[in-house]
Image (cartoon, rainbow, N blue to C red; front, side):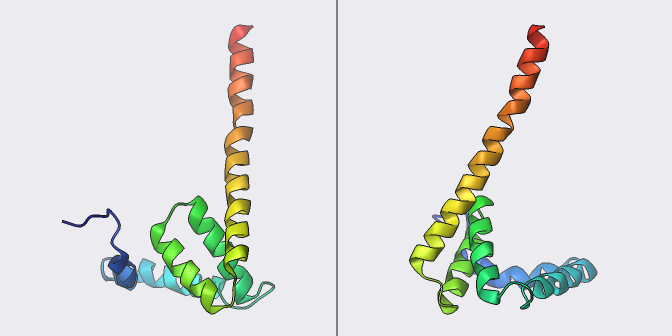
Length: 111
């Protein structure tokens, strides 16, 4: 039995998702490829964004993939950590701002 719930080897199997839904899997990979093409943002910038999002989504496969990709694109460990902190700040801010809904509900119920 594996010591970890996530097996790093599974990342290499990602392309196989098309086996059980070829049309949708291919459409996803076409879209994914298009998103990461150079555009208004460089591939380096997109890699850094992907790394931050990978952390907020807590995807170990994405974290592995975009850490490696970022290093290959010359992203420094300091830039990576700063991007992760930006993602964490947005994630925590989004959590806290939803507290306003709770406050509104409490105020409404106390009337």
